[in-house]
Amino acid sequence: MDSIVFVTKSNNNFYKLELARTLLHFVEYDFTYFWEQCIDLGKSCRKLGGYSSKQFRVVKNLITKCHPYYEAQINSDFENIVLDCLIEYICHSENIGLEELWARCISPKNAYEKAIFVRISEYKTGRAINQWANIMRIQEYARAKLDYIFEGDIVPRNMYVTRKGYFDLSFSVMAKELGFPSSELPAAKRYNSALMPNSAFMVSKVSKLILKKINPVIDEIKDPVYNPPISRDAIRDQISLDAFSYLRGMARPDGMELEAAEETFANLDGEYFLPDSFKAIIDLEFDKMLENNIILQKCAKCGKYFFYDMNYKGRLCNRVSSSGKTCREMYDETKPIEEEPITTDIETRCQILYTALSNKVGEEFKENEFKEWAQYLENMRENVKTEAATVEDLEAFLEYSERMCVEVKARPAVKVIKSDPMQAPPPPVKKRETSKPEPQRFRFPTLEELERLDNNRRR
Ligand SMILES: [Zn+2]
Image (cartoon, rainbow, N blue to C red; front, side, top):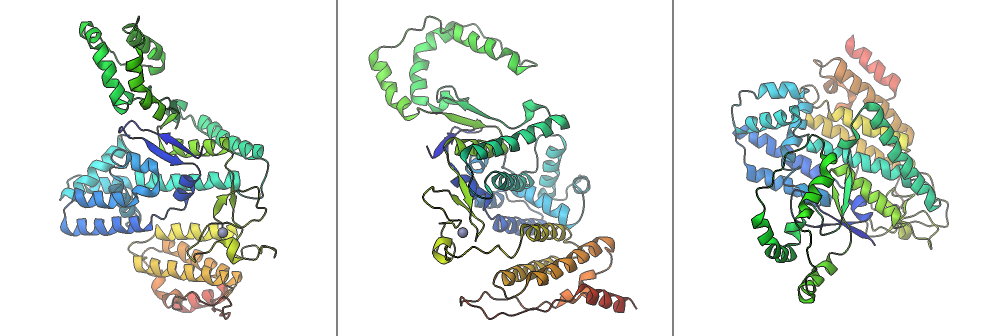
């Protein structure tokens, strides 16, 4: 089995989830274009004061393929994801809290502000969460779990199962300690095709046959009363057996009638899952992957995961990259694989800085300044990888950026960036075509030099 089928309460469709492929596609999914389109849409809404639900729908549909769960819930949970993204962006770029944005839109001047107000009200009353923020967190969660279980050398299958168990149990213990009720934590239920919440509609052909047959009984039943219980678990058996009591004595239909249903149930044989949240389906995929002995391995070159194959003992992937070749084709496996020059620690520093600085975009730190900085960082990393710059150069740049990041926060009124040497970074470095690039070093100011510059400026 290399796939599972899931359903949701919000519609009557079946969704296929290809084990491991869906997960890898999701963790590598690039949401940048979607994010940019949201911002552009927000800007035009602000300018025109209007709000076109059609345009919002178009942008919402841009990421339909990020995960089948998104596709399944696009018109329910994710209905307002574009607005969520805009709310997050406004709060970050203007450095204000949700409460402030909400208060600002209390007397909305236009449909756009009204939409923002209504949406934040939904957060405040616990009827919704910011789904854009949620999808980012889920992606981070999936990446973390993937690394936790599969990063490193190949180990016996049991060890993967143990790592997964340890990871999930740590979560459960933490949630318990925090006092989060277990009934509200994510879960996926397993059904057969005839007992799903929407089975009566989803297996409609046979349901109609049955309905025809039991209609006389239904007609005789005097309005059944259903009182919503305090505890749903307590009365599950009771209401289901009440329903069943009306079917007491139901005779098995004759051969012809059952034959008519045979094909339907042959096609629907198997298990159907109903995840109640995004996390639930991510966890389910991990469970099913290991149940089906699907092991992933991280490529020593590109860092992407690939399917473990017991006939292959190397550490390189067989995934075709943008160059049209796989790492196995591009690199010599007989040579020991060099460690990536940029360690995980440095990568983490880059990511933390990126997030921290992107959150400071606003009055003092303009968006184009941020973009310039991000491009510079990207070039720098690329150069380290192609040995056109050293790790020390990158670290110096990070130290410098970290200082800058602190300063933006400490002295918000001063245009820190404007007076910094960052103002004139070297032009973006193009990727070289040849396999042996001419080493080219960039000269980055040392910390002492930066300090000296700062002091000179202050004098
Ligand atoms: Zn690779």
